[in-house]
Figure: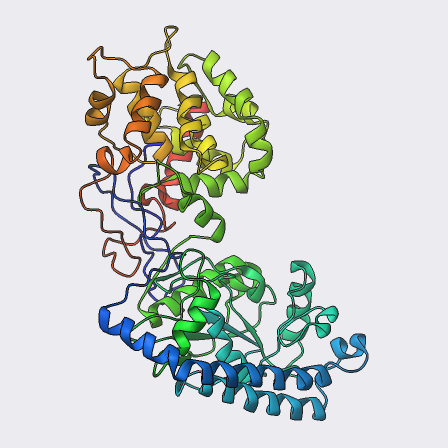
Amino acid sequence: MRLKGRGCCAPGRGNGGRDEGGGDEEELGPAPPPVRSPFVHQLRFSALQKSKIAFMTLTLFPIRLFVAAFMMLLAWPFAFIASVGSAERALEKPLSWWRKVVDVLLKVIMRTMWLAGGFHWINVKGRQALPTEAAILTLAPHSSYFDAIPVTMTMASIVMKAESKDIPVWGNQDSRRKTVEEIKRRAQSNGKWPQIMIFPEGTCTNRSCLITFKPGAFIPGVPVQPVILRYPNKLDTITWTWQGPGALKILWLTLCQFHNFVEIEFLPVYVPSEEERKNPSLYANNVRRVMAKALGVSVTDYTFEDCQLALAEGQLRLPSNTCLLEFAKLVRSLGLKPEKLEKELDAYSGHAKRMKGGRVGLKEFAEYLEVPVYDTLENMFALFDEKEDGLIDLREYVTALSVFCKPSKTLETIQLAFKMYQSEAGTLTEKDLTCILKTAMGVSDLNVSSLFRAIDEEERGEITYDDFHRFTEICPDFADEYLYSDQMETESCLETTVPPAPNGFCMDFSPEIIKDRRNRLQKKLN
């Protein structure tokens, strides 16, 4: 896996258009540092800020917490009253007049709660479209439970299962299938239902870029109104994502701020083209680009599943230009399940070891995976076809697959790779180690000379896995010291200035290059 390119946060800059941009090749030197993921949020306080927080904790925080909790409890009976009656009839018919009155009261209560929490300045820009103009509001970026502010201010419809009426205030989300069906039914009601508000990212990020939009909001094929959220505060105590302060800490820190600012901007209604109506993913992607341009941030094909791979705690962390995220996406597209693949890793590696470095073509690769030859498989094959001669080394595929299945178990992956690459004497050369680590990190260029010399203390020109393992025990941060570049500042999606990467991960893996390489491969096969 040796394609050149930027990493997962390389921007496909939102340009307001309805097509994908291109990118130029870039020579790589040492591996860049691990990427700053959109799922990570770090807070650092100055001495003065710590003093302010301590003062607010002893004074205003208890009052704000009490008032906010009281308002939440006050809202519950109104929410319960609104759910009284036949659940089936409630789902089939829009809100009656008295339920609309209850909604207004809830809106007042929740606005009072936000005011008590220090959200004194909620700036609304643009005009909210009427339900007949846009049945669905798509909000991004989704970064916190405080994103409920626009929900409670507009009292847009939230699709829930009937059983959720027994759960105070918020409830639980329905199954995906039923949710999508309900969204579609209400969106096509010609304005009879309140607007549906959806966060298409499906998870919280740190707002540094917009991750992949899920297609649920775009399946009905009706016009949507994009709504963007900003929190222009000096100290970001709002963000609540997968790695960072927990929910209670975020609540405490936010209530300890003198003022909290929120900006809600309603963008013009986006009317889908005929092609976008037929292709919800295309529709979602184009709306995302419009929103990214308005926010001034980039877009990335990152999903939460990719987050689990990119943020895995292991000794060999993925750098920002890794192509393993693209590999992971292709594995999922092939319908291959990580749980099943992990059980079969030994069988895969045994077969690759018996090949003794022999390379296979596309048809043999398809038989090896027991899948038919089609576009997705050809794209995966192209990832490993370094020489573009229609042949790949199965050992590289198995190494990448091990990282995908066990991202936090670095040494297990390297041990598996050693077994495939080592000679009969149980040793391997610097060239072999280079190939293993390049594949395990998903990069096109990597200098392991310093690392190999450090392991090969006796200067034999070859090492064993035991040598490598002993070295990692002595130097657990070997990747930071020997493999990554000296510049250990993590890259931000917002700060990246390189040209757009169409797929968000590897510039050389753009649709045009995939098509070109696939055509050349097919000519060779014919």
